[in-house]
Image (tube, rainbow, N blue to C red; front, side, top):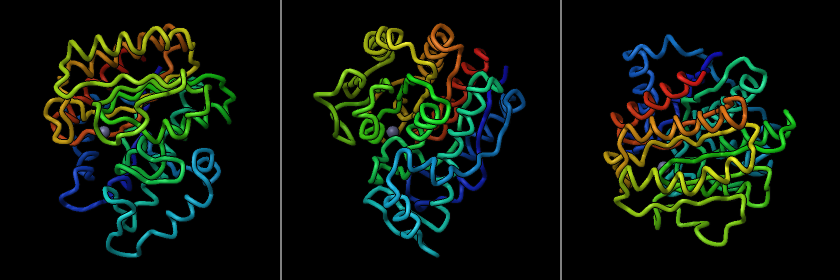
Length: 308
Ligand SMILES: [Zn+2]
């Protein structure tokens, strides 16, 4: 079966300014790198479609969605929060990013693809129910999970978040929803400085000290996630795939190597093979050093292809 790849050129029109690390260049660099390495031809390429209002409102209230639409500037940029700007294209880009996860869930759960990667932006895991944060507007991975639970009637979905920042938005949305096991690793203490203590049993935090190296990381993930993930018996594994724990990334201080993204992908696809017929859907979150981002995505996609 195939590894599906979702993208859309309009996800590159959302632009928060020349100095902003979450730049459109991230997506074009990934595409060019996959073409240069020959991986592009091995993927089933799909153009993303916008998530509908009803699909967005599973994770966000009507008032929040319409507020973002109304805030959209007709020209120039406005700040939605101190880190996160909107230009005239942002609202559409955000709906395309969320929509790619819906399509990926549909393809994987109907056996059109074994697994999928969504190369989209804006990222989503910092978006809370009613609040933009950390370059995020709609919580893409939460919207995908809620589509699988609601539309496809799954009962248990796991979200693995290996971005270097905690997915506070995903915690906010699923804090009271034990149908979702949220396994997260993140530098601590660090942005977004939330949800570090007193979490319910279905939210597994693996905090990482600044300077964490490959061996320490792999042991922490193995100890923190795998046993409970197997016991949870997910019917689908979703991945918030951020590549900003790489040692070259300018936004954080964890020291992973590109090989660690091969390792984590092998672990995820192995567990998915044992637990849920290999069903994995991965969505891009952070990663701001273009070379380590593109090489990390390459390693991740090689792992998905090997399992498809
Ligand atoms: Zn991040």
